[in-house]
Length: 239
Image 1 (cartoon, rainbow, N blue to C red):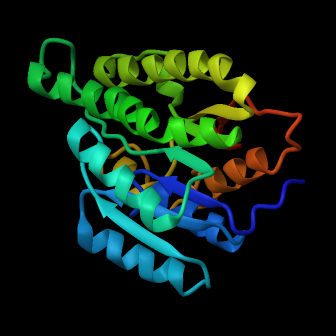
Image 2: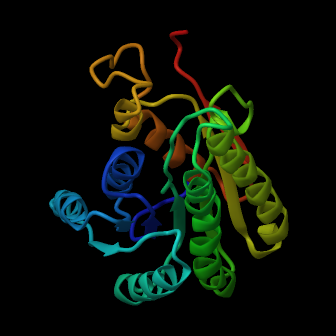
């Protein structure tokens, strides 16, 4: 297994939910962590929790859908963190409605955040990974990116696109010893899924938890460098 101690990671949408669980899991492995998001108070609270675990932790407030903010934020993070080895593209938004009901502006914003946001962040981080000829990129899609459903057209379109972009990037940067993994989790009891009414946070025995997702990421990164987890779907054992 690969030793992760003293590695440096950037996690978008790292203040809560999947991002926070991943940041905590990384800290337990001795990884220094930078988290991003739009709510500074939430980011500050999470960073304090991570620092208490004995690793370096910082945050940056920016909207991944805004390229200028991303450029500035990622530059500052890498300078403060002293480099980057791992990128987890987790930031995303969701909303559901029929094709005709959903406003064009909302449909567009889901694509802008979930797809273009991931592209913007990766575009700023990738040159650093290529320069050091090594790195990990974990892109979070969804089972909604594998199969469309009624009232999920915008969200599914964004997550289908993430899979295509991620797989293309994986084939492009393998020669640079950069592993790109696309994850397609089913419903996980995050703050967002609870707020959308598609999960119940208290049902820990029947609904996937953010910590389960974080364990999968750690397992993939710990694989020997000769091996790469190209993609993985995480499902609950309870139907």
